[in-house]
Length: 191
Image: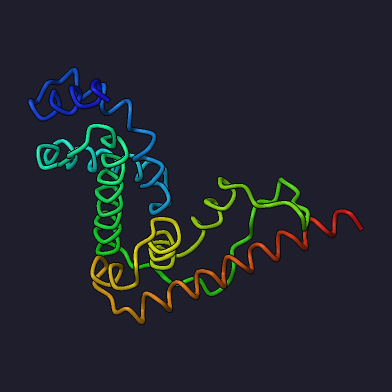
C-alpha cells in the first residue's frame, strides 16, 4: 500500500512518470466501466481518457484515512468519476444526434450455445446490454451494476425517478427477450 500512496503523491505533484504508471495500472479498470455505458470502443477510449484527466486534476482531493484501504477507496472514487464521465459523454453525443428507442430487438450473433443450466458469461451479458438504447443502457448499468439508487440516477441524468424506474423495467424486459431468444435458438440446435 505504501507504493500506491507514493504513486498517488507523485501524481498529485504532476510527476509524469507516476502519472504514466498510474494510467497504465488503472486503464483497464476505468475502460471497462466506461465501455459498459458507451457502445463503441473508440468512443469509450475517448471518454476513458477524459476520465483520467478528471482523475489527475482532482486526485489531490482524494481522501484516505487508513492506508490499508487505500486501493479499495481509490477504485470506488475512480468508478464514480468514470461513470459520471461516461454519462457526460452520452449527453454530449445525444445533443448532436437523436437516438430512437428500440422497438424491435436487433438480431444477435449467436456463435455460442447456452443450455438452460448454463449461466450467461459476464462478457456475453455486457454485449447484450450494449444493444440497449443509450437511455436504457445507462439506467441499467447505474442501477444493476454500479449500485446507484433511482434517486441518485434521477439526479445524475436529470430525469424523474419514475423515468429511471421505467427505463430499468424496459431494459430488463428487453434483456429477458434476448436471453429467451438465445435459449430457444440453442435448444433448437439440439432437436
